[in-house]
Image (cartoon, rainbow, N blue to C red; front, side, top):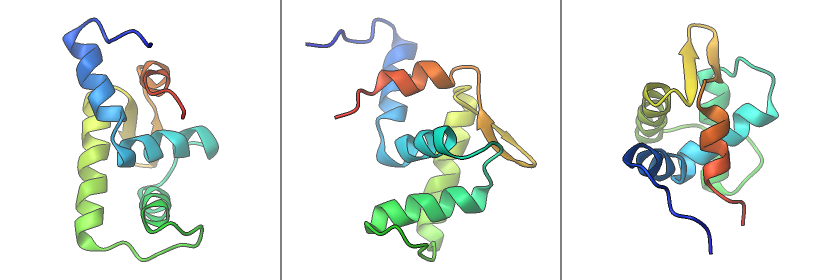
Length: 102
């Protein structure tokens, strides 16, 4: 059995990064050279959502969800959103290690 997060912050961080779209963004940042553009994130998340490795057009609702997730990850210092794209933030490693791979 895994240990439960011990603080409110850890629980909030776990809840945030356990969501599929947040996890996909973290995975993308470990895979691609930084900075990762918003367009790359949208294509990657949409492709995973549709279960295909090919680029799929991102609809407006999906774009809003992705942008909201990016903002939440940025606010939690998991990622840094810059003009040139997304970078790993100071809490990236903590967040990435919170969700065990299954």
